[in-house]
Image (cartoon, rainbow, N blue to C red):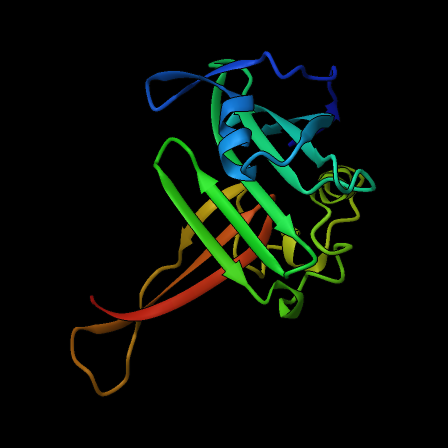
Amino acid sequence: MSIQQAAPPTTEIQFMVGGIHEGLSDFLDDFYNETGFSLGRTLLVTDSLLGTLTVIEIVLDSDSSRARGYAVMDEAEEEFLYFVDVDRANHVLSYTDVLNEVSEQITGIDTLEFYDETDRYDFYSILQNVENGNAPDGSTQNPTQRRRRFWGWTHLPPVPVSGLPNTCRCAKYYDIFWIEITSGSELCLC
């Protein structure tokens, strides 16, 4: 993994979203519903699974003190891949996997394990800390822990349930920028 400062973006950057040519500014206009915004700092991130990605901060005009959103694009393909918005006032995290057309919202994020440790999900700082070897405990690649992902679901191997033949517990975790955002488990056949 490698992270480095990138050139500042412009709102004219164009992406391919699900095969439809669309500008990042259009997506953000739709998401923020007429709230003014600007593009902030950018980082280049190299992930072993996803390749080189550009992470762009989104700063709302009404609160320019810190980034509220983060957009991720594939540098080589110029595809808009992911978006995450951290509404710190209402404790809501919204994330979108653009290519898979999946959007989710998590409320009560101020009670999640890494919220305070990461300065209330300051994802730009999280990425810089990962690069500097100062990642939050849950985002390290410790061999005794599950391997974290840059973005997406990780499904753990099924664990047999005692007393229930052919039944296992299947656990899964959703990571954004190597931080666990949500998790779950269910019974499954094994």
